[in-house]
Image 1 (cartoon, rainbow, N blue to C red):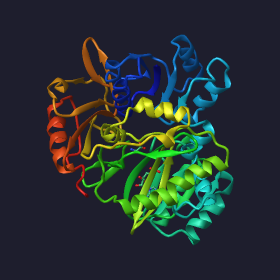
Image 2 (image 1 turned 45 degrees about the vertical axis):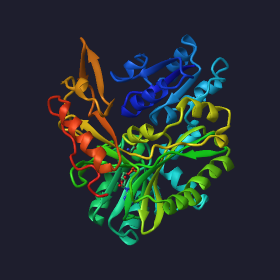
Image 3 (image 1 turned 45 degrees about the horizontal axis):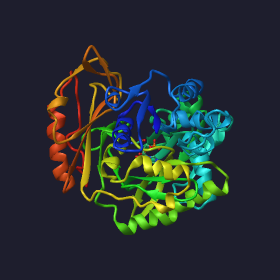
Length: 423
Ligand code: AMP
Ligand code: GLY
């Protein structure tokens, strides 16, 4: 099978690495890919949000399956575009329809969905620009600090602001409604603050059944001790030791199954990954957010622990045979440490030469933001490289990831040395 993967991050390099191991995969294409994916196939310089360019590529290269890494192409309707046109309607797309992607693309939509299907999540209210006065009243009279404000739409991971007091919440509300995140924040969700420890659960669904993948925890803040601004993710551990069988049973019964059933009840086409961003409050799981894709950098620790043939799982998704499959997980723990550009998540420089990758023998090196030029590998993003290791315990795995994070060099490199500190 010829498979086209959309995206260019560490998640996509990990997906490429995993799919390339399948005897069912004859050729991989990436749009646009990075210096890491290029080792497994052909990078094609097209924008993954350009539906017609993807359509042309699928026809031109006789692609048999499209796998979507990031959310933007899904929210942008790549599924619907390919399904609508006769010459590509038969090509399976691993990723939901635009309607399914709304679980990530609109926080207000996701909240209403959870409310309808009785899925545990923080209490909330939604307000758009025409309801600004009501939002101000709500903050003044009802909301209890800390107050969580969320831009309704996609805001590159920056759309959630936790305000310590009402004054800041009012200021932030004003900024959001007047377009701080463009159209995405013309509607705002105001949410109750939940206190607990977060974890990420991934399910693969064929629209009828689902399989749960290994659980992970990511580290979103840039600074050690979980301080400083939010990032796309600075590291991850799978499995996080605090997630036991009892908790996972609650997650499945109260969250995963009702979500899949909810999608079916609403007649939403969904054949792909569902990412449950969860928080454990006391002994109970609550949904912080849905994503319509795998997490990054969680994928870089989840896939190395999945022993199954990933392409075989994708074929089972296409044929709605997922019920017959069984996920086999490596018992070891995987950790990943993200090397980032100096200044990230603020402004940073690109084009720095990366050296030392060839010396790494006992970790997997997943490229997140890289490109190649003149035989050299260069930085090309804020998050540059994820260094993944397996170990008997997370501490063992971290020793190896830390050693190799040190061995890879580029100007301005930064990484957190305390991943797993709270476990
Ligand atoms: P999101 O972009 O939805 O993943 O939110 C970013 C981060 O904000 C989450 O990972 C949480 O740490 C935090 N967050 C979001 N919603 C809440 C909430 N209701 N209570 C506490 N923290 C939250
Ligand atoms: N690591 C969180 C995310 O992918 O959204």
